[in-house]
Image 1: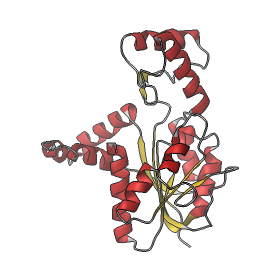
Image 2: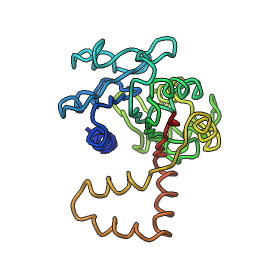
Image 3: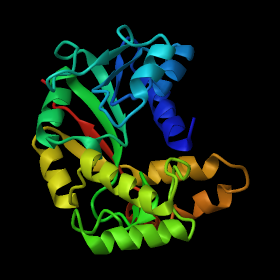
Amino acid sequence: MDVTNRFVLDFCARYAREHPGSRILDFGCGGGELVAAGREASLPLFGADVFYGGSKARPQAEGRGLLGTAVREIQDGRVPFPEGHFGLVVNNQVMEHVDDLDQVLGELHRVLAPGGLLLSIFPSRDVFREGHIGIPFSHWFPKGSKLRFCYTWALRSLGLGTWKNEAPTCRQWATDKLLWIDTYTRYRSRAEIFAAYGRYFQSETRELDYIRFRLLDRPGREWIVSLLRFTPLALAARAVFRKLAFFVILSRKESR
């Protein structure tokens, strides 16, 4: 399990200790790795996903014995759980894949109980590195741009990029991966993101929590974490992190 999923799992565990009896949803759970780990730790964790065509998540969820029970399929945009069913909803690298952010946030608002929390981790359009294919700025070019193709092809030829064995040549890799991000990603500006979240929730950003968790994930970095007590360094770390990685947004549904 990667460090981001461990951060989410740790957040879920702390929430469960503080809110016994509250259920947790992993929205966009993919193959159910987080759901399986949470259930092994006796957390009341469920999952939901659309299982889109560019993913291998469905057979993974089936292989874990989760599909149809702890993990359910989203159909016609509706999360298959009752209103107010969850105290916490988490999503990790999901919101940049949804077509209609407002509709999704409305559904998550529906399934959250009053006062419930939504933890969202995903990049905005201005992030430097396109995290799905590993080519910096490849998502900044217009779709179909010849310059983008040549740029991506050149950087792949220099050894950059992820999933390197999925095409026989660097040229084909560039063609396939650019088609993938064009088909399955929807990068939005910071203004668009926070405007959409503001229509449903009260939100704050928590990148520093993630930075601390990631630093403490390996020994010997405690001294770096201590530096984040100083406001200028904390602000700089958060700003750089958002450009290199993603937002961490914690949102709360209004209480009745």
